[in-house]
Image (cartoon, rainbow, N blue to C red; front, side, top):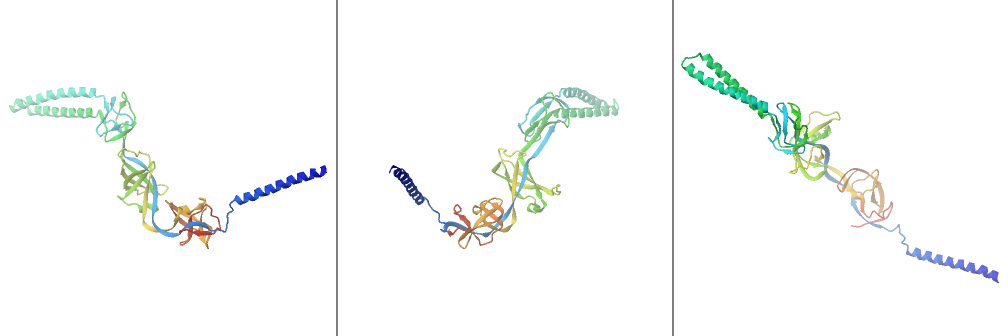
Length: 350
């Protein structure tokens, strides 16, 4: 009897466990949502169509100052004072450097004394010549000596004025190459001055795109670091000779912002629209699935969603220009893509 109980009790426990597990399985299955692949998925769609659009070409270029120069002294001499530093804003005619003019001023004093004596001689000889007391040639020599001394004085005055080096135009000192105590000489740069109130923007254009540009053409220019700052330029130069890459320089003149945001050396781009309107096959860019290497769209065919490989020629905002893979009139799915799969039944919702 005991042996029989040892067999019955384990079997009863096993049976109880099996029944319990089966009950749990049925309860779990009842709670799980089973997706019906045959049920139509509600989607939104759009029709592939041709759309007129002007071709937009982008050309990258660089901003340069309209005026930039290296300032040097017109005469040689020791620098006794420097009035500007790198980064300083200077005005036209503002003194930048003062050279030692002591010797020139001493020479000027000497020549002025000579002029006083020669003027007295001319007055005296004029009186004597009028009364025939001396020959007229003596008066002429005195007059020539006076004129020569006056020229020497004017020369010295000009040399003294050139011991002051001034800014040739309104600018920013972008490079300082001297200090007080240095020696200045003609042709030796002392400062580099850069005027960025006006700028030149230069791009290189392939010969096939040169027809997009013409003299005095006005365009909008975008600085890469300040895309929201409006800049307007006008063509000042269309190159007549191409470089090794067969591109031609095109240059624009433009005004900088009032606070001189745009600096020399910054990059930007100019957008040029082709005058001819071209019809493009377009779809909303949001319809594209897959990868950039192989973009795809879901096309509605016979009430089913079918994946279609496409080639994208360009993206313009929310519009994709299709190169191949679709034709006008095809219906592409724009919304409801999450649960969509190849061959799914679809119901188009307006």
